[in-house]
Image (cartoon, rainbow, N blue to C red; front, side, top):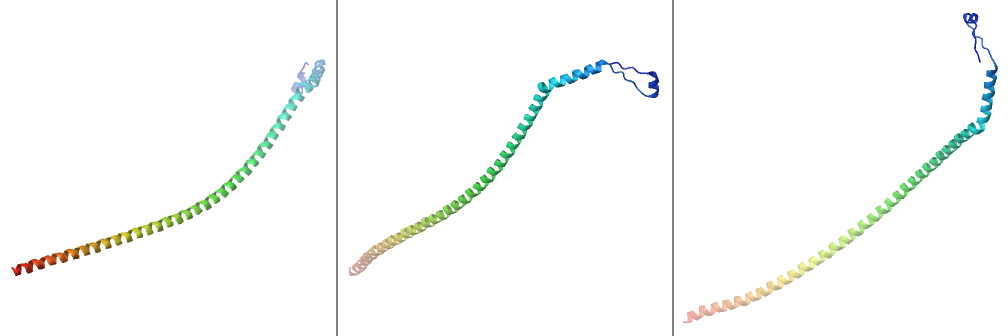
Length: 157
């Protein structure tokens, strides 16, 4: 293709173009390349792009489904955790009540045992005091008899 510029048109602001056979040859080559490359290059590349888009959209859909499933699982987990906490709270309260009952029973038994020990100790002390009083009374009687004998025995001498 040759382009020739007419000096008269340059002054007037126009350009003339000369078409020759190379333009037709280039158009034919472009068309032939288009016809050859379309099934060999363009269609496979477009199929790859479409497949990639389809897979990407499929993976996005899977990701959405997995996200929804994760939300469901999290909600179910939280419900189950709440239920477990309720059960644990009830069990803890039941054990506390049972422990308090057991503690009260042990304290009652300890008080009863302490009262028995104290009562037994008082009886022993009272028995010992009575025995000591009895012994003291006998000793006192003996001492007074001895004193009376000595006093009387001395007065008799």
